[in-house]
Image 1 (cartoon, rainbow, N blue to C red):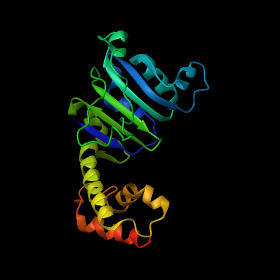
Image 2: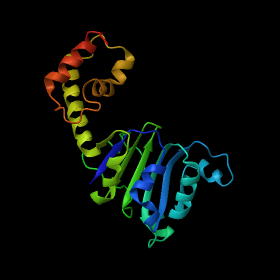
Image 3: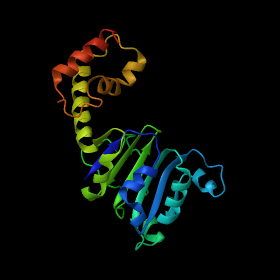
Image 4: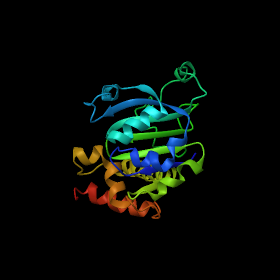
Length: 218
């Protein structure tokens, strides 16, 4: 399904404006929520971990405050569905039963079966938007921050991760310190492929970078 990865710090006002959310007749199911700037009249609800809001209420608060969402999964569900129908399915989550990110998959789609759009703010560093129809997300390409095809990026990351697993099995971790060992995939991704969506993932490139870390180099 269509997905877009957005490198920005958890602010949704511009995103919702570009999506044209003001025209929607929907509920927002919000889960895994952690929000700054809740100490204002009416803001106490944003201190909860989960809530359901009408579209107009969400847009009113975001337009007025543009709060920073450190974490939060926002699922847009048509208002034709009742709150009971929405609650009948498991709520969206950031990780699966193995502790693996649900947004690191080759195929992305909104987790809630009734949702037509899902926006996930992760750790104040990035936002992933996933929709059932590509046309919904197209306006987000005009954001001034970095955007990338989320599924294509994930496929490249997973390919790199597989190569790293093979190298680790063949060579071990050498002189890598604990931090490097724990964050190996993230470190090599940033070194080789961050902001380079057209660079192919090749074993020789990954192996050369891996060897430097294996030797204890930075």
